[in-house]
Image (cartoon, helix red, strand yellow):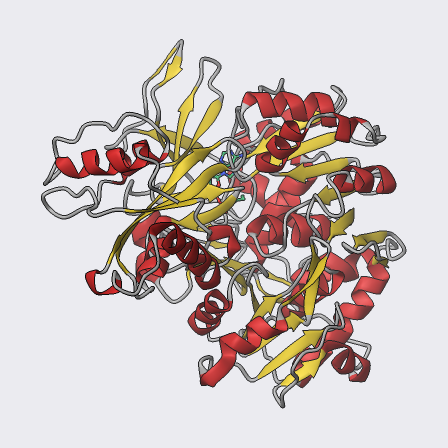
Length: 636
Ligand code: PRX
C-alpha cells in the first residue's frame, strides 16, 4: 500500500470513527442495508449495523461468482502426503451449497450449534461456510484437542451435529479423529448430538453407527442449488472456546455483520492485499481464531487466492514450508514467532535453498516477536525487502487491533506499534489511570481497548456475567485485554505478555487453572500448581508442581515415572499442546496465609532464577525445600 492510502485511512477514522466503520461495512454485500452503525447504550453489550441483514457465506463465495470472479482460485490445498487440490470460487460455492442442503436435510436450522472437529482440509472450510450459510452457529474444536475437551465444548454449546473426518495426516502418519468423537459421545455423554457427519480423508477403518453419515454420501444426495438468505447483523456466527483464568474454557461468541467487517477490513489493509495477483498463506489451523479470521472469513470475503496446508512444517523435512512458498509463489505469509524461532535455530541454509522472491508481506501473530526473530524473518525469509506486520489481537477481538499498516510508517522490530484506524487503545495503571508518558516512553501498564469495535466479542456463551466480569468490570467502560504493555519514546506500543494465569505455548493459549484441574483429576494427585516458564523457542512452556496423595504413594511408581505418566495424562485430558515440559513432585506448595498459591515463586524456580520475596508465605521453608530438590536434580 502506498503511504497515502494508509494515511488516509487514519485520517478518515479520526475525523468520524463511526462513519469510517460504516464505510468499511458497506464494502460487504448486505441483503438489507443497515441504517444504524453502533448502539452502545446497553454497554458492554454492543450492537453494530443492527438493522442490516447479511450472509457470511454469500460474502465469501456467491458475491465473487456473481461479480465475475468465479474462476479465480480460492484454495490451493496441499495435503501432507503431497496430494493437492484446487478450488475456484465457483467450485467452492458449488460444494458449499450441497453441504448446506445436506445440513438442512439433517434437520439443522438457523441458530443450531454445529461442532466441527477436522484436519486442515478444504472440507473444513466448506463445512464452516455451509453452517454459516444456513444461519447455524459453528463451534470449531481444534483437532489436536482431546475427546474430553471436545465433549465439554459440545455440551456447553449443546451442539446438535458434529462434522469430523476419519482422520488426517500429520508427521508422515494418518491419525484418527472419528475415534475421538466416538469416545466423546460414548455412554450418551453428549445427549444433544443427533448425527455425526464424517469426511473421508485417510481411508482408515472407522466405526460407523446409525448416527454416523459419510459426508460424500450426504453431499451426493443433496440438491445442488441453495439460495443464501440474509440474517440479522447480530445473528450469532460462531462460538470459539478459549482459555481464561479459570479451569473452564469460555465460549467466545462472535456475530455476523461486525465480525465480517472487522476481518475483511483488516485482512485487506494489514496485508496490503491485491486480490487479483497475491497468493496468501496463513499457517494457522482453523481450530484457532487466526484460522477463522485469516484463513476462512477475511481472505475469502476479499476474494483472495490462498494456500492451505494440512501438515506440520517438518514433514517430511524442514524444507516443506519453503518448498510450498516457492511452488505456489506465495506473496503474503502469516505465521507465529515460535515457527520463526524454530527455523532460526535450525539455521538459514534450509530457507536459503529456496526461491522466496515472490514474498512481499510477512505477518506475525500469537505472541510477542523478539527483535532477533523479527530481523531474521525480514532478512532470511523476506530477503530484506518485505514488510513485516506484527499483529496483536485475541480470540475476543475477532480481528487485528494493533499492527503497522505496510507503507504507512516505518516498522520497528519487536513492537506492534499502533492501533489500526478505527481502534482506540490505552495503557492504564492498577487504578485505571492512563500511564504517564515521558520523552522516554511510559511505565508498563494494562492494555485496554477504549471504544467498541465491530468485531468485538458479543459475549461468553451462556454466561453474560462472566463476560462482564472478565472484560469490563476491571476498568469500567474499557475492555480489559489481559496483556501488559508500554509506550516507547515514539508512542509505539510494546506488548509485554499476559498478566493473568493464561499462558502462551507456541502461540497457543492455555490456562494454568485448566491444566491444574486436569492434574488433580488423576488419583495420585492431591494438589497441583502450574506456571508458564520462559522458553527459548515456544515463548512459554508448561511447568507443573504436584503434591501426591498419601494413599497413592504405596502404588505409585518412582517419581520420574510419575512425572512421565502425569505428562501423558494431561495430553489425554486436554490435548498434546498442554503437555507439561516438566513436572516436579513436591511435598508442599508455597501459599500465603490465606491459602493462595504463590505462582510467582514457582515461576522463579521454573525459570532457574533465585526465588523472590518469601515473606508473605505461611511457611517460608517450603520454597527452600523445592529449590533444594530442584538443585539435587531429583525431578523429571
Ligand atoms: O497475549 C496476547 C498474545 O495472544 C493473546 C491472545 O491469544 P488468542 O486469543 O489465542 O489469539 C491469538 C491469535 C490472535 C493476547 O492476549 N498475542 C497475540 N498476538 C500478539 C500477542 N502478543 C504479542 N504480540 C502479538 N503480536
